[in-house]
Image (tube, rainbow, N blue to C red; front, side, top):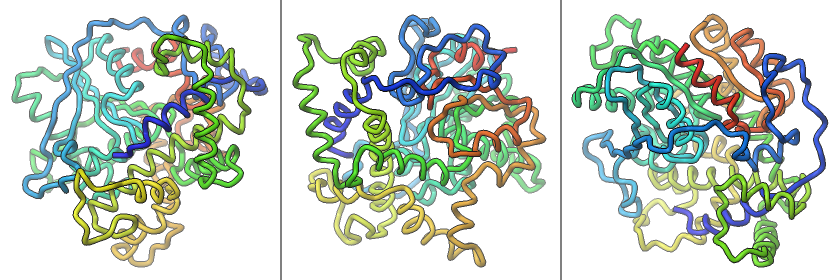
Length: 447
């Protein structure tokens, strides 16, 4: 939807592939169990943007069959013509030949079903003997257009209801195709991990409700794993906005100058080969050559999240006809010039979205609740009493995860206790492909 995504991606990847000063060592006591864990980057910014070099990655089969499928979630109602490429929900499956447990995987902020992290998780879990269904994030445009009842993601209970609805439809389709399913599991990374907690809770509530129909009975997820989730979306959004400010003294208004500097570096890169920014080894090679500051790295990470936010805000605005950015009465067409709307969307933070769109929609339906209540409601602590008694729900995260605000890790430990696995380094999702992390995830679902 955003035409400048390619330019921004180049700028992101190029500056992300850069070194910076060493971060103080993480508290080793946080992960005594990781004796064979040798993830190479102690700097959380470096870890977040470089990922895992190939020599440290889990070896996964290269021949797993990944089928991308489409689903009509709601009958009737046509999406605006400008979303012609989003006319059905897209999801992916990796299926076993015989009966097996099925695990649903929920993507992180702004990611679809075939993002890099999703494909890696799908291949790892499939190799471990599971059926796998990969679902886009409720914050991805394809989900907002096709699977969100309100077209306004971010409210945990409504996102969970939308996800459960999609899961039931997918499950019905699989069973109609004679796929043998023995039990159900659930996981998600980043925001998808946060979503998974609320999905598991709502599923349990619906399963125990005497008036629920057979079609809406619960999955009864036997195992749930939250991978690098935020404790509070509100806290993490504030952390991410602060990242953006670190390297852009003028805030988002300094974006053009920032991109120009990045493109100048790209032009100077001495290689005749195609630049593959998805290759971690290429990224490490660039890391060894270029040295932007930690502030620049933080800004790049913040921009990556802001791009996802811009897609969310603009898509929700068009679908709800809120008139927040896109004019209420103007048709949204594939030929509609988008540059001006994009410019506004990029300058709109997720906090603006919470204030001006989400709160406007939900607070009138929740008498007595305030904006602060809405923001506080994005914390897992609001379901903390329930989480603390759920032996089937575990958490995996990193000591230096950059989306956690001060005190968030301690609160996660309080909520999950011994059901927590903390690695000493890895930033936000940087170590997902590390063999020790992948082994923990697959062992959790197969032990």
